[in-house]
Amino acid sequence: MGIKTGEEYINRIKSRKPEVWLGGRVVEDIYNEPIFKQPIQEIAKLYDIQHDPEYQDEITHICKETGERVNNAFLFPKTSEDLQKRSKLFEVYARMTYGLMGRTPDFLNVVVTSMAHNAWFLDKYNKDWSKNIKDYYAYIRDNDLFLTPVEAGGIASYSLFGMMVGALIFAPLADKLGRKKVLAICICLFSVFTLLSSFAPNPAFFSVMRFIAALGMGGLMPNVISLMAEYSPKKNKVLIVTTMYCGYSIGSILASLIGMYVMEQMSWRVLYWIGALPLLALPFFMKQFPESLSYYVIRKQGAKLAGILNRIDPDGHYKESDDYEFAKVQERAKGFPVKKLFENKRTLSTFAFWVAAFNCLLMVYGLNTWLPKIMQQSGYGLSSSLSFNLISGIGQIGGSIIGGYLVGKIGHRRVLVSLYAIGTVCFIILGLTSNVLALYILIAFGGACTVGTMNLANTYISEYYPREIRTTGIGWALAFGRIGAIVAPTLIGLLLAANYSPQNAFMAFTVPSIMAALALLVVKERYGSYDKPQIEENIKLKATSNV
Image (cartoon, rainbow, N blue to C red; front, side, top):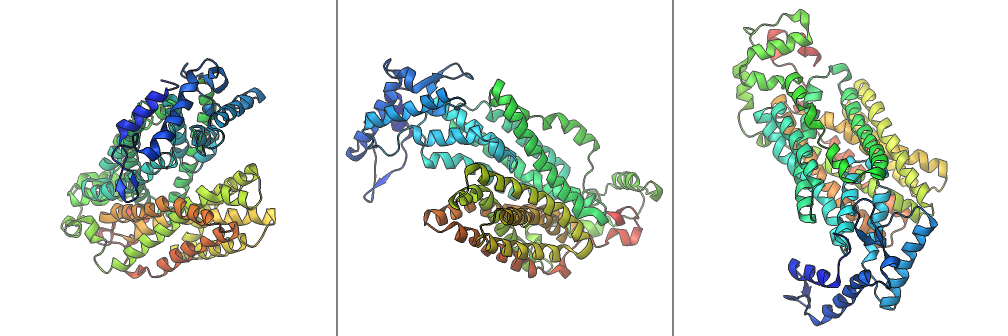
């Protein structure tokens, strides 16, 4: 692989046959369409000069990772000489096209190269983001692609869509087949297909692998939340679950640090090999991790129940022959889990949770994606703009932990609605102040009132539903929220593209913040489960009264 010729570029266009409309008709042959043919030929010439001895050393270099010659658009500039090589590439392309071609092959390739070079920053928000950009950078470099905005954004959206689909599918399956089994399946999907992504020979293969891996991640999250909530002491349940999510952020930072040091010496693919490590923990997980209590009750496995309860409370002396009300729980568990989300007067609350999750993740992903850009448009340098994102991350962790503590004191809804209200005020003030210290404080609160509230809401939503449909409840809420995550970057981008001021862009976040708060206010808590005593009342399970 490496630099391509003009003929190879033209053949790629002919073989892909994209759907293109021109003047109300479909263009059947793009290359031979008069309006496209000449520009395609001119771009092909830019590919050909990479092989011309007169220009080759000026616009290409030998890649240290692959040993192949690649375009200088993919060069990580570390010295003044590297910058001169990049500058020479731009000069040659401008001279060859007389400066009249607005989007030469280097344009978005340079953008992706810059993002890959600074991918460590993305990793603290989502460990998939930095991996995706590094992998995609390596692919377009090795295949000498002429990247377009659609291609650059397409693959990045597959993971989010896969997570949404995974939550929709695996959450109900977990409530029917068992959360432990489905968790194991999700771990396998994520790990195996993340590993296979490292061997991607083309974007299509990579996209499919990342999509399937995201299915596993999407199913994993609601299952972990449900089991963690079920086996955590009531007194500190919310704090424990939200702290678990802080561990997810810490893992992202560690992955970023590994990537920063490993990438200098080894291929980017090693980051995807690391993604297979959870498979090593799978045997321990299968042996030591308990299933949900409701799973064993539904299947009349009294011995399993007694074993788990005696581990939780050794003084309980639980026996297989105890009355676990098998018939009563089996009757409640009958039917399709998704349908049961709307039974027993839970319909309004279910839709309210979905609306809240949609608006919350819209804020989370919109803010994470566009915060540096908004701050740059406000007059701050890139390094300062990125530091605002770092402060936001600190606020997210602080909001999760402090909010988890407060939930134990005053309740979920009061804390969540208060955080959304504080977030609304913060976004308004962000649009009015230019004081640097005030901005840092406000953005920290903004992080607490977006990601922090989502972490707290996970437990609130999960506990609202009975244990036999708990994973479905949180899974479908998160899946609906993923729609907000998918559309958020586009919505904020449209605001900026429409020349809205940065101040107005910040104030735009007040709308989903208010909507999320209003949605939670209509939740009918009296119809929720919240682990109200069921089996425990009759058989006096002291252990599960603390679960």
